[in-house]
Length: 565
Image 1: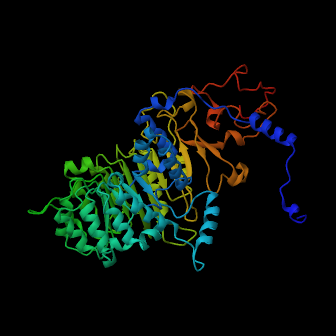
Image 2: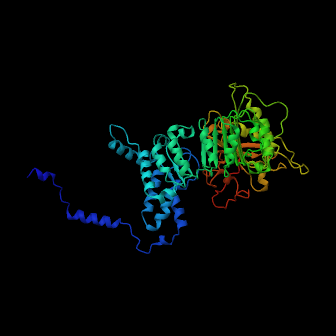
Image 3: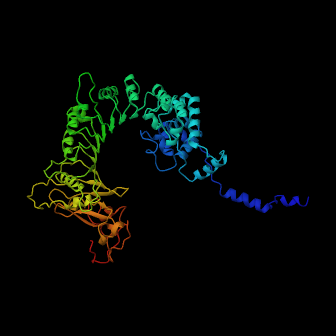
């Protein structure tokens, strides 16, 4: 008995118990005992609040799970939204509607809790194999939607990890069979290639899900494309055709039965040429599209696109055009295409060139509606002394300087030195009797990137007005934050410095150090960011006038020897 007394828990003194009760009472949070104010919130406000709890529940993009994620832990957000649904009866209908609207199953938790769950899965595993958590979640979802038809009818988007949709085709087929409102689902690659293993999944999707909005047809799925003629998926918005071997007439008829088609992509199709856009009796015309993407279509030239855009309905509808590595659609033909596409707002042109542009003059690229442009020209030559892409970017510079693209606001180029070329604008006579300039006179955001870089380098440029006057004289000096990959030389601080591009008063531009990088005199000792959120705000107020010494946020100058005043 004496030995067992050693294992008994010692009794705490009364003094310690009283102290513990005092501490608990001292740090206890006060509880609200008034009326429940959440009852006054209607369903619209609750839905908005719950969308912030789980951001991906409002994701309606028709992109794969790998391309539509966001920063944060999606699994934890879904768990929090599920807890909101169980908190009050009033919240259940709103939270449950969001919980099953856009479903996303991830392989892991993107937070520190994944280490705990991974350790638990290893302990529960058999034969040393870790449990497949996404497959288990898909099975649980399948049981839920099949047991409750109301829940299944709410599912509109279903996004899965790559390995889950490849290895769980049967569970995926049973899930989509009870989701009649489904608009997008991540499918295995074999589904797009005509794999017989996906035959059951295709049948369920065609019979049970008539509202699918995006579909892809790769080489081997020609028979699946012909099934569109039987009335399946009449609400398709996006169709991708990649390497299919089929009669052009069949493709035109399949596309002609889709009244809601707005985006069409062609890739690696050898038989596609200009005649594909021609009008043929008894065959539906090529549909009017909002977005047209062409990738490695070597049989199509500018005449085919111009013929398609000659129809006013087509030219008025087309907003986005993407041309990538099409050998018969060179840069020299872009001005013809832009002239025909009257309402085009986004153009993406990607090409690999081996020779320079011809020396003969080419009309500039002109469009009054183009807002965004990707002009990515890459030279396949490895020569260090000569790059054929230089003439292509010079052609782009001439088009900008001729004021042929007045609505352009975003420009993406694959030349890290291109922003500097805009600073070499031709001089403009700053005289009162000088005619208005036709030069570059618009704000422009330039994103540049070299071949060995992964991220885009941002440059914002605001030039002077047409008479060569400084912009600071007409409402504040506009600036741009410039950060090139090679910097502006050792005298500017190298890669770590940011510079500013400002008008020089004669139609050109001048690069000066940014506000935070300027040398400080005895009268300019204010810390960075003391005058505003950014250096452009510190240089001038919205009106462009310098701050007085009595204004808040400004330190009194103690010296007149300031070179940057």
